[in-house]
Each structure stands twice: as C-alpha cells, then as structure tokens.
Image 1 (cartoon, rainbow over the protein chains, first blue to last red):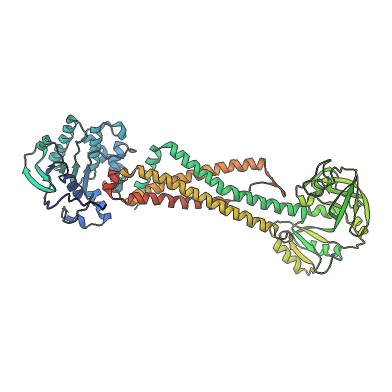
Image 2 (cartoon, each protein chain N blue to C red):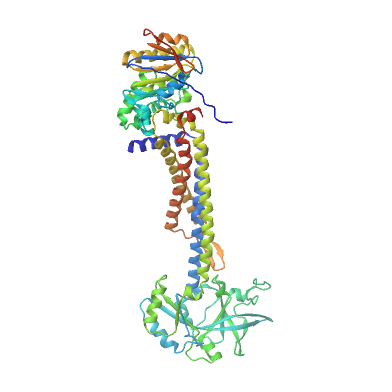
Length: 216
Length: 400
C-alpha cells in the first residue's frame, strides 16, 4: 500500500485586507482548515504563494517561519491548545517571554489582555480549572498578546455551547471593531455569518462563493 | 539566545514543578543510586589499596627495604650501614631483620613459618607490631630465650586456621620448640602474642637478633633492613637518596618488595570498576532516555502547540535538557548524601579484608568524575528523544 495523495486545495486565490473579519466556511473536507493551516504557516502547500504584509512567507526558512508565527500571527485552535502545566496568565505571556520582554512589560500586557477577554479574576487558574469558554478566551488572549497582523481561528466555537460561542464571537467582533484586528476564522455554523465582513465558501478545495457582508 | 534560555528554563521548571512528583522522585532516586554505585566501588578500591599500603608499611616492610646485593645471602656490616642510612634527612628509623624458615613444635603439633630475628628497639622505630600485643609483652633487647608470635600462628585450641600455619592454642608463658634450617633446635618461652590483621605478619614470630645470630652463627649481619621514612608516598625519592649515599645493597620500595601484588590487585579492581562504571552509565542513559522519551511522547501535542505559537524547536529541546540537568543535579546531591551515609557506616563497621579492615576512601576526583560522567550521559540521553519529537511536523505533533 502506498501513501494516498489527497488534493485538499486547488486554485484558491484570496486577498484579505487589514481590519477585515473573514469567515471561511464550507462542508467538512472542503479544505477550509487546510487553508487556515497554510495561512498560519503550520503547513506548506505543494505550490502557490502566501504573502502576508508583503512577505512571501513560504520562502522563509523554518526558523524565520517560527519567528513570523511568533511576531505576526495569532492562532486560535478549535480545542484551545493551552499548555496544561501553565496558568492562564503564564499561557498568555509565554510568547512575550520568547520575544525577550521584561517581566513588567509582559505581566502588564498579559494582564490587560486577560481583563479585556473577561478573565481578570481567573488569571492564576490552570487549564483544568477553567471552563471551555474560559479556556478559549485564554487561547484568544495568547493569540493577541504580541499584537499579531492576523488572528487566525480554526472553528473556535466547535466545542462550546451556543451561549458561550456567542460570547466568543462577540469578543472577536469587538477586537475587530475596536482594535481593527484582522481576523480569519473557519466555521461551519450558519449563524456565525452575521459576524463576518466577508464569507468565503470552499467546496472540494476551491472557492465556491465569496460574499461581502455587513459587520455585525 | 538569553531570552530563549529563559523560556527553556521557564518551561523546564513549570514541568518539574507541576509534573508527576512520583516519576520525578523515582528518577532522581535512580540517578542517586547510580551515583552511589559510581563512587562507592572506587572508594572501596582506594580503601583496599590504602589498607594494603598501611599494613605493609606499619607491620611488614616499612617504607623501604634494603636487601643483600645479588649473590649474597646476608647484608654485612649492618651497624655501619644503619648509621649511614639514618643520617639521611627524613629517615626516622631502620630495623635489621634476620629471616629464617623454621618449624615450630608445640604439644605434638607443628607448623612451618617464618621466624624473624630483630633488635626490639630498632623494630619499634620502624614497625608498629609492638603496639598490637594482645597478650604478654613485646621483646626486649636482652631477651635470648623469649619469642613473640602472631595470633594466627599461635592459633586457638582445637581450631584449624584454614590452611595457614597454626599451633592451635599457644599462650603466653608456654614453651615452643623451634627447629632452625641449620638443624639447631631451641626452646623459647612465649613472651607475648600480637595481632596486626596482616596475615603475613600474624603467621610469623620474632626472637631477638642476638639470639638468632648466635643460633645461625652470624656476626653483624642481616637478611634485610627495614627503613621508615617521615612521610609516606615519597619512597622513590628516598630510594634514590639512599643509593646516592653509595649503598651497594639492593634498595626496594615496599611496593616493589611486594612483588607487584598491590599493582596486580589494583589492576584487577580497576577492570571490575570500569565494568561497573560502564553498566551504571548505561543504566543512567537508559533510565533518562526512557523518562524523557515517555515525557516527550506524552507531550507530543504540547510540543506541536508550542511550535505552532512560535516557540523555536531548540528552545523546546533545551527545556527538556534543562529538566534532565535538574534531575541529574538533584540526583547527584542525593547520591552524595547517600554516599556519605554509606561511608559513615563503613567507617564505623569496616569491611574486613585479609590485609585488615578496609575503610572507604572517597576521593574528590572520583566524585567530580562521576558527576561529570552522569551529566554527560544524561544530557545526551535527554537530548535525543526531545530532538526526535521536537523536529516533528507541527500538525502531526498536534494531532498526536
């Protein structure tokens, strides 16, 4: 048995402007997560280009890609992907540590962001002591702490109830409106559409439809 | 670079602080026991060597031995040679000895062993046998019908001495008959018994030089002259100096006189020690490798997440290496404490070797060598599994 080659994406051409809140939607297997992985420099396409702030990120060395992820991208995973041994605050300031920030700087910035996402009183709690919604807020705070150019979110509400999902999407919307934060979010929930500026629908690895929407 | 190290240290510390305490304690304990094993055997070997050296110097040979030149049975003009040697700075005593292989008879039993003719005062200036009398007294210069013998030769009533010469129950005041190699026979009163725990000495006996010279017909002659120096360990220097004074006889250090016995023993011990060290280090490698391998496999997803959020692979690897260094450092400290306990116990209750009690002699160099080896193998054993997992593709790692 050889390895089976699957063409997850083909011919996708997409431009995202600064300050946009783009929703990538589509059925399961349509290639939306693959597209997000490529945008987040977690995966490499077999061909094509990805330009972020004018940088051809696919041409970067592994080390430079790591630095690019650290400094320019924020990634929110479907299942939160927190480091279980760290508290909420430590999870958030970890990447600031890597950037060489002073203790005062990273504590101030991380505390501020955790307060902004509504976790001012849960900062010293570890993952196991937080609810799903709280964990996802920590993940969002972690993604935002280094002022990323783009916040990438891979079905961030998939494991949350509708009320908690709405609070997370409200948070995204506020970040987008208040901070002009560019957000690209993968979702398959129809009701999420109301939050997006633009909806890109994928089907079998191709863009099936691109719809401009009003901001929520 | 520094920021990277800071993050590695942060991740390592949090993992140690909030990881499994049981696994951590067990790993530290294993490293500690390996450390004890690395230090213990060399300390015993060192102790054995020290015991053999001390026994040889204090009871058997002194620091140096002057022997008859080739072709001669005895050293002539002993008094003059003694005076010449004793003039050398740092030489604190000389003791001429006449040696004879004799047969002892006591109550129908007999034993063949060595009889030494000594000048008691001179012997006291070189060996410490006179301080180890278990019964009676040591010889005096004027004694002619007295003998002192080792407790092994004297023996215990009704007990064999395991192949060693034994008269099975000689006590102070008893009479022992001695048959000299020239056919002369003498009866001596046992004046004292000594026990040095050096089997070569405790199977021998002593009479005065005056008596033995008379029996063997010698005049100011000796089979050997033992030489005591002020400082141990500089025998080669003293040997050169004695020879530079025009001494024509053979001069041997106590190690040379032992016929390489100690060197052979050291070589054999060192082979055992090398095998033991290698086995210990292999165990250390396997233990650390397994612990870090399981650790990294269990945290494969976490490693993927760390890479995904922009943490360099090397920072992640270094965090595991730092954990290993911490475990090894604490393990070595616990090992030092355990070793101190073992050493204290064995100092109070020493191991008994044929040469006498052996006290562990822990050398600082052995401790440093063991620590360095442990750190080296642990780092390698920690680095490899961490490197294998950390270089994995991000998405594969995250998916587990």
